[in-house]
Length: 504
Image (tube, rainbow, N blue to C red; front, side):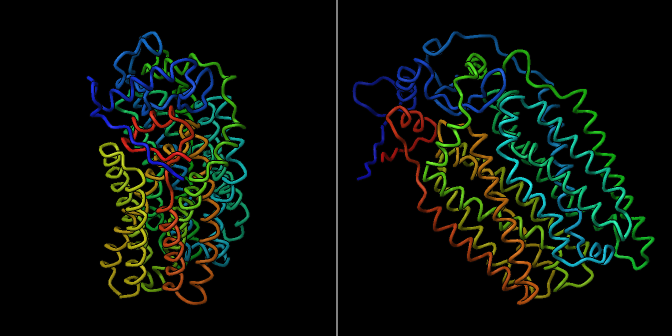
């Protein structure tokens, strides 16, 4: 029978606070061999999570773990972060540059709606078979090589698309989009690695958030810019001219970013930014088993439950983003530009939601409660959006779409943070990769199914379809709990979350 074991801070005959007592005990138990370090795979060492008891700022006596070494924060860390964020934004922009003006491209290439949808879904499909090999590549070659290869694919795909600005070249544009989708697999999981390698203890969460927001910025631009650059004109030659201009701008930006990555982006600072990173660099690579980490995650039932619920939520977001133009045009003909602005509203509201949820987690450490609340509010937002889409008032759609984006996109960092708690001390890079893989699978399924339902039964039925799965995900999230295998892991988790542990 499960037993709730909560270690309290107000112990008798103790001069330490609860958190200090836990960390001091954890230091004594975990120091020999660093058996419970939470670290992510990195070449020439490991990236240790600064949130655990080994966060050097929380330890009363660092000498219990390792000798104190020199640390330094380099100013160029911010340039590395923003350069990566712009690469991610460039790639994310190309995901939606077709879908948000799908009616225009359908007429230009003389194709059906499903073919246009696949220009977005290819991003999701490519991720599934490539994520595990690329995680292995990241483990063995490091951040610089991964970002370099990703930006190269992004640049090549953008230039391929330039040759597709004519009505009979749809296969060329699809191939270019496929090449860009390969870049996504190299880019999507980098923010947590970059933050841990370059930034100090008090900056890691902020840096990771900025890296993630780079992708969201690209999606926002993808909603806003294509309807402006490619107006819905009747003359096919003029339309081809506008499309070509958009492709040239995209390729130019991707090329500039690739050149900057080649000459500027670095693997890691010469001097580590934190004591945790210094410790990580001293851990031999042979102590990490990539296959064993995957096996442990697949056997973790609470985490696998989160994989499903995360996929349901983010898959719904992918479907809404891909089919947004079709849903808006049905009820508001000729409003391609406003469809892009509504998508922009969803993403910007989501960026705000992500930041607020991150700050809330830092202050409260209530991972499950916050995740469940935001999941439930995502369901409420989806219901309200579905009910108001056909009322005939665009300003209402802007408001309800913003509410939906605030909670549905705000859920993204919560899922990753909750995964860290469920999988401690496994690699957070591997767990995030599996979460993203689930999201891609459900994104493809939901986009195809909702698109068919919209074509046959209307937008309301398609959105109700998504509401049903969000309800299922909410119920499953309520059943997810953090389970640990031993007292040492419980001590470390309680230091991170200030909550009790459930032994099973």
